[in-house]
Amino acid sequence: MNISRRDFVQAAAGVAAAGLGGVGRALGQQAAGPGGAPGGAAGRPLVVASSNGLAACEKAMELMLAGNDPVDAVVAGVALVEDDPNDHSVGLGGLPNEEGVVQLDASVMHGPTHKAGAVAAIERIRNPSKVALLVMRRTDHVLLVGDGARRFALAHGFKEEDLLTDAARAQWLRWKENLSKDDDWLSPEESGDPSSRAHRRRPAPVLAPEWTWGTINCLGLTASGDLAGCTTTSGLSYKIPGRVGDSPIIGAGLYVDNDVGAAGSTGRGEANLQNLTSFTAVELMRQGRSPEEACLEALRRVAAKTEKRLRNAAGEPDFDLNLYALRKDGQFGGASLRRPGKMALCDRGGKARHVATPGVYAG
Ligand code: ASP
Image 1 (cartoon, rainbow, N blue to C red):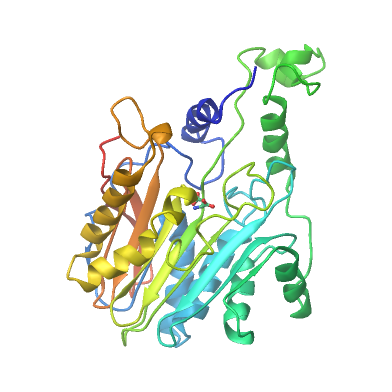
Image 2 (image 1 turned 45 degrees about the horizontal axis):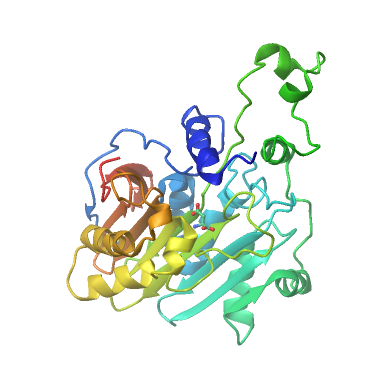
């Protein structure tokens, strides 16, 4: 009998909440307590990010204050997370697809030129954000995928490497071993292997693998009001090879309009692809909504369009999607579909902090 994805998701939320996984958001993961006031005005310059972006925000702010272009600043910021093997939602150490291969997605967008670049399902290159930046600057295209994206990166001197760390491989193996009770893959618990320390320690129930939707989005605003953004991810864990999420799709995982503001997203990419929430949030800010209200309204639209299969007993979406928004005047905000959360923020003081964000639903 197969264990359904939903069962895995619920179990994985418990694993993530117990702190066994990376710092990316797992579906259903309880947000840490409020870290400050909800969205507001922090002025310019400002960098905001998903909750795993504290270090990214600080790096991006440091570079912007030194006079660097905001798109270079946010890419340098998220690259810290891509390089971190302990964040299992991004870059090196990201959880792989169902065949155990890490495939990464990323996008960048530059407000002053309104140019964008992206890569999808790229393998063996740990910094897809940097490749996306080169797609923007050194091609006449916006999106390169798969092997073409990898070969483009190699042409620009990127080095290939195996991105599957031992820790991520162990989680993938755990997922594979738990797929079916009828196949020939045996977990240590099923085999009863007495040499297995896991067996001696914890014979039952079978451990659930870590399962993440996790990503980093980072948005930068310079003192003079220029905007840029970047979203980078290893995507949905154990996805079908070739699956592309929302992160590299301009308007879904990221959107920047230098006249208005910027928005980016993490969470269930499929729901975002069907609704283009980043574009929606920027458009709502253009119409006068605050960043937080724009995020909430974009997410309410997702809720309204959610198919029955993905609703809980109360009829609410049973997945999470998170939006972060930054307005040209330095107002910022974020929101989640399912439950209150937090986002990262760094102003010219240079020390990043978390601020609380509301959820459309209470939990
Ligand atoms: N949005 C990403 C995707 O669907 C994953 C995530 O943010 O957790 O690929």
